[in-house]
Image 1 (cartoon, helix red, strand yellow):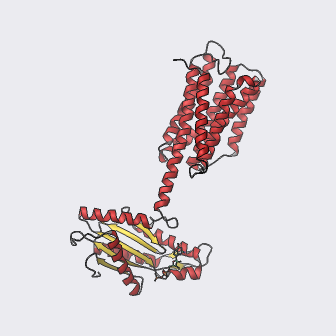
Image 2 (tube, helix red, strand yellow; image 1 turned 90 degrees about the vertical axis):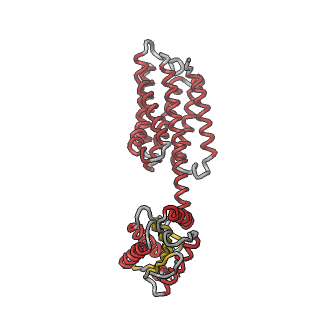
Length: 399
Ligand SMILES: Nc1nc2c(ncn2[C@@H]2O[C@H](COP(=O)(O)OP(=O)(O)OP(=O)(O)O)[C@@H](O)[C@H]2O)c(=O)[nH]1
């Protein structure tokens, strides 16, 4: 098999143009607005222009073409590296990126002006590309494991690119004859190295695209299930999980407690101290409750100042004890509103309903359980607030 670099260059240009078209077509979507995708688009644009310049080598003066085409490709390599950095640590383009790129470009101009042999220029460009991509490799090795799975593809691409560029830096000096240009290499190894670099660069670019897609999908999923203010599950996600827990409780014959919690006279906090203070109280409350719950418990915001807690494998006495301890904790809690003087206090009322499949044969639906907890919460409010009303699902006898 012969690796003809001119043919590889054409294939490379077509693939970059395809990727660029795809990135341009999604630029107004959620994915296209992500900073790492914008950087990837610029990288892909630079790569496409670099490939084109390489192909047009005969149309421009030799030294000018050499510096320009390699500088544009190096810019693409650095932009790929910055795109990975942006995804991993949120840092976009900065002055050091420009300095690294400019230093390499100026160095190349000097080598060309000194009329050094082509093999030295190949080594310079290869080492320059290595240094431009190295930060991405180091960051991926450090942070990549904890991030998106597609970043493994990026890591693999970086390793392939760096091994190829390092080999390419020494390869022309070991060959029997001096290479003349990219298209007239000194040995067949050059063609293979060019192919490996192409493969590595595409692994990086497609991996970044997939990783960014993974990240936005995860963020959209989180936004769809989480309450933005308190970080609790939202109403829809909570209700869905309650249905699931009822079924599990029935199957495993274990009790299940569902609690509705409602802050007392919350409107007064908003009226007297402002909406921001109200928000701070909601956040403080959510944090306090979350810190007392088990990993397996479910905590959601049902709307306004009403929250829901689901305690799997918890009987009536246990649930009452847990919820009353929560109530006492909230009673002791103080919240300092942002920029406001003084500390705010709040109390909470709770209605707790417990379904025990060993005692009650009738399995409730999620709606029925919520309705029963609501009745109990209403009782707690009317009995004077700052208290917990607990009952079984069928018998409405309070504890
Ligand atoms: N700051 C803030 N306030 C909210 C939010 N959601 C709802 N509220 C306010 O919560 C208040 C709830 O008032 P009410 O339903 O009268 O309840 P309450 O004052 O707590 O009275 P009781 O429940 O009977 O003790 C309203 O003033 C809502 O505007 C929110 O996200 N942030």
